[in-house]
Length: 176
Image 1 (tube, rainbow, N blue to C red):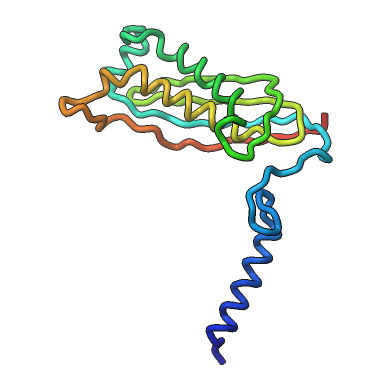
Image 2: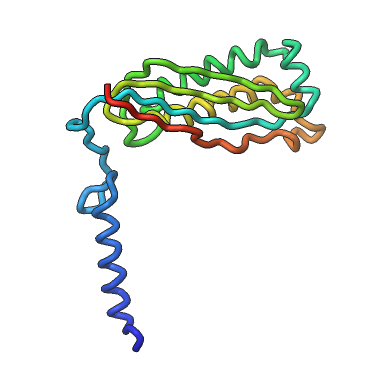
């Protein structure tokens, strides 16, 4: 026996309502809201994210030898990553402003890419994985900005340049 269109619609409405009840960033009316974490206990938290930027081997060599005209690429990218971590709450809607207790940045250079790993620590009521992701993406964007003049081809395009594989590697939580 098949359902009538009205029965299918009612079933869909029912499952959507059940799903909406589980959404933490919406009110019962479907309006967006910040999650209330006020009653949660403080916990020591750490998140680690990683990503990579693909570059021409000649660009990697220029970075290694500090021969990029704009300055020290990795030092600048490290500053950008840390600033992004500290300002995540300003760029991601409904993200809580959390006390950042530590940020670790680690760059690994290969022949045709740079990998950036960002670890973020906090003691608070919510995790810090968005902060780690923001640190990675901004740090890699800073690398791109610093080397774009040498990465461009004759048509002003970036055929060898790309940011990829941005992801959370680890998320930890321990009672404070």
